[in-house]
Image (cartoon, rainbow, N blue to C red; front, side):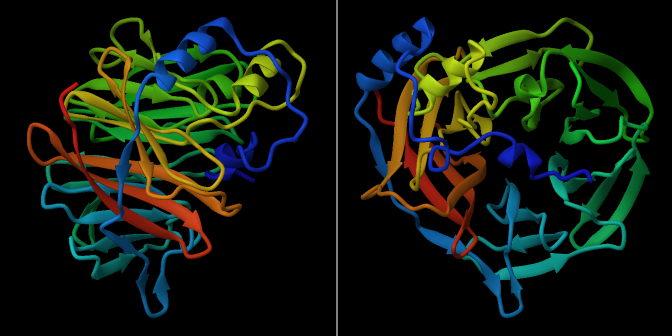
Length: 339
């Protein structure tokens, strides 16, 4: 059965991998570790948490978006619904529809929310104005058993299907569902299982298992380039290297989400029980490390997604979806200090 959340559990979290770790890391990871060690982390404090109200409580917040007013939208894949909160954390509404399955928030077209509802062999793309579903179309047929991701751009919808084989698919669709362009990604599912992002008509394909991003500059018209995240450090780098060497079967999940805002990429760097956000420039070099106050181990603590809104030239409004004992979206403000 197709499961959107399978990408999270296909590997292992830092808190759940085997305790006997290999010693070596990749040479490029050694350089990244040195860069990360040279930076002093900034401390961020949650301003508020969004959980829901009454019998409308978040259960599995998988994707999160912010609108231009700072309202928070959450795709809950256990309740098969979309939550909307105002800036103060008040629940505005919970929206579902008969065909809703694992709703994936793909982005905005103007002020219209675009939501992917994955399916076994065909997904639907749904457009919401408030609680009203104003448009919907079916995607091309996808191979059975794929992980499906989508991103809404100015003129197009992008859809990625990650298979269990070594060939994966990316489609560029117009807003009627017609295929405009198609490309293939080669490699294992570990190489490509991860969210999609779009900005204007640029497309970014994330992977949860390796610190890099595949970038198409103008739709799918040209070959992509790979943006490597220099400075990415993780307690799981040894296990990642062992996986690449064929010494272990599963790759560790090292990042669950990333998003670009202003001049930076904000990357969730998974840690065993506390929040860490790495901030990279658009060239992929680590500039800042953001951590929670008093970080400590919590077994059930899974950051799932991040949304970031530019408030001013140096100030950023961040929302992080968390699966914890009390699932929530937490809100943070961060100001980039000059180096």
